Structures are given as structure tokens and as C-alpha cells.
Image (cartoon, rainbow, N blue to C red):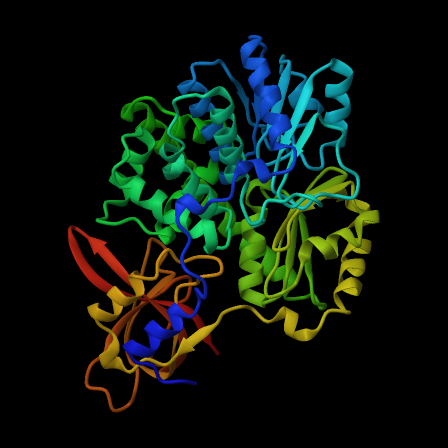
Length: 527
């Protein structure tokens, strides 16, 4: 493995961006989105005719942010908007009969959902309601019979950059509506919200996504939006990074829809005072703590099931698992076993769950090949949701593993790319500055990982409420005089039984009590 210095690291990071970095002014015209013009003209007509307009969102971060952007836009143009986000437990996913039963509107547009809503489109048609679908998920073979469908992944859509999230689709559409209405709205004012959705929905941080996230994170630092003020007060940092959003903010926003109702998070993002934003954020914090406890219990049980299974795809199911945490549990199984994982929560005769993938395994495609066992499913390459009868679980498990057999073994290799080995003396603030200059990090621009081979464990101590995490003092190379402190989450190391470890790690900035320090985080320990 290559031994690195600062100049070689700079060179390797620069090579990730072959083309010149995109500017916001280079974002493709939203009119290139198929059906966008038709959709916008209908919404504009509804506004002119004083018709009732409703938006239906989704209960994950992308769906909540999408709904928040729509709500805030309509506030600015001073037109009433009915905003609804389905409840995961009472309604199920997306626009459906349950959600439509409580909406009285002439025009309904969806955000971050709807591409599979065949039944909902039929109901809307029967009621004389014009349904406009805006989504970014992979379209099925049979599309809903809607008034308009705006999805960059639709065949024939000319929008040049396809890897955008639901919030971006609606932001682009509303930008087109602004143009149609000749409204005085600054679409850039939504970027503090938009960047949260792009990061949380794991969109590749390249091309226009990179430009939007960069600007959005900067806006978060000085936006007067009450939610943004609370976020930066909570993080208490001189600069917010994409990882702060991914690990500290997104899980809190997600916890509302996972455990209770997404309206709690929507009210946080759309709060008109910092007091209201603070109250909602506190609720999100409490829900997130409960989510962690529920998740830890389910993860332990799921691991026990998975350890007894063979095959390339893990499919585990149990009655009583909280439906809101199965996606996170699936991610934990992927990390632990380095296999795609599907985790199902059983409720009576039905099982509902989430799938997560790794490497180059298209989990959506594998699930689609076994659709005969399912009631419904949806998603994309790396993540999906599904519902099936309990009696079909075993057959589905066999079927999806049969489908996976044709994939090459290298498809299952995690993309845990390690850049190389760092000499101990290269780990300093100058290196941190170089790494910071290539942010934001995330999908398609991962934070560089380095390798420590057979490092000596000089000292170790546990931390955390349950003492399940470790602070390690490591000597990276036998000849080194200096040592470095590493943080290792969810694993305890005892130097008496493990005197040396090999691991991958990242270099991060730690800010605490206005003091800045280098922080080395262990990504993976190699047994």
C-alpha cells in the first residue's frame, strides 16, 4: 500500500474532480425536466383561479425537507397550501387512499414519492383531482395515470444530471413556477434546507450537487431561518460540514417519521420563531434517543439471526421490531457482515421492511426480480422498502439469494477505499487544512481513509454511558516516538489481549468549548 505525503494526498483528491467545478449558475434549466412545464402551468392556473392546492410528502429527511421547501415557497407567494406527510404506521408510504381520504383539493402534487402510486392516481382521476407527481425514485414499468409526472429517471427525460433527490426536483419545479408567476422569490434562500436533503439522501456530492451543498452549508452558518439558527447553536462550530448534517442533524429529523409523526420535523423546519424551532428540536432529540435504544436492541437480535444464515443476501424478520428502525438495523448488518441486508418487521400476517446494499449490488433490481413474492416495493440501487405476506418470507429469502448468485463476487466488495499509509509526522493541522479544502465529503467524494498496519495499542480506555466505545493511544509505526489518540465507536479494545491492531481511519477536526483539535476516527478494525 502506498505511503503518502501531503502533496500526494492533494494530487489524489484533485483527481476526483476531472472536470472544472460547477457553479450554481450552471445548474441545468428546470424546464428540461419532463412534464415540468405542464405541471407548472397547471399549478399557476390553480393559483390564478383560487383553487385548492395540496402537497403530499414523505416521512424521511428528503421528503420532509421537500415538503418544507414547498410550504415556505407558498408562504412567500402568499397562497394557501395544504401540506400532508403520511404517517408511516397509519397510512403507509406515499400518496395513497388513506392520505387522499383526508385531503380536499383540486390539485395535488407529491414530493419525493408517487412514482409507484397507480391506485392514488386512479382515485384522483375519479374525483376530478389533477395529480402531479414529483419524484426521483426508479420508475416502475407501469406508471401512474397522473396529470403530470416529473422524475429525472423517467425514460425520455432530458434533464442532464439524473442523481438528484426529491427536494431538488421540487426546488427546480418551484423555480420554474416562480418564473411562470413572475414572483419575487429568491430560490437561493432555500439552500440551507436543500443541502440537508441532498446529504441525508446520500446523493453523489459531485457536479451540481457539490455546488448546492457547498452554498447550502455556508448559508446554514448565517441564515435567519429559525431552524438554521437552532442547528448552528446545537452544533456550536465555526464551520458546519456535510458529516455534521449526516450524523448529527439528519438522524434527528428522521426520528420523527420513524417513531411518531413527521409533522414534528416539518414544524421544526418551518418554525417562524426560534422558540418554536427550539421546542420542536428538543422533541426530535428525545425521539432520537429513543430510536438509539430501540435500534440497539433490534441490532443485537438481528445479528444473532444473521450469524446462522448462509447466502449472499441476509433476510431477517421478527415480530415486535419497531418498523421505524429496520432501515438502520439493515445498515448495521451490512457493516457487520459485508452483505446486502433486508430487515423485516412482522405485524400479524404482514411483514414490512427495508433493504440496504453495498459495493455494486443493485438491491432494487434483486428485489424486483422476486416481485412475485411481494405485495409492494420501491426504492433505488442502494436502498429499498418492501411489504409481503409472512408466509412468503422464506420463499423470498431463497429467491433473492438465487438471483444474487449470478452477480460477480467483486460486486459484493464494500467501497471502503483506503488511500494509503500515513507516516505519523504527516498527521497535523496542515494536512487537516488540505483535507478541508476538498469538502464537502459524502457519496462519490468520500472522506479519505488511511491505513494503520499492526499499530501498537499503547493505552486504551472506554467511554460512553454503557462503556461501549474506546479511546485508543496508538503508535502507528514501531520506530515512531510520537503516538496519536484514536476514537473507536461500538467496540472495546483490551491491550492485554489485543496489543496491536490494523485499522482504517479518517482525520477530522474536533471543536469543543471553542478549542480545535485533530481527531482520528477508526472506520474499521481488521481482525
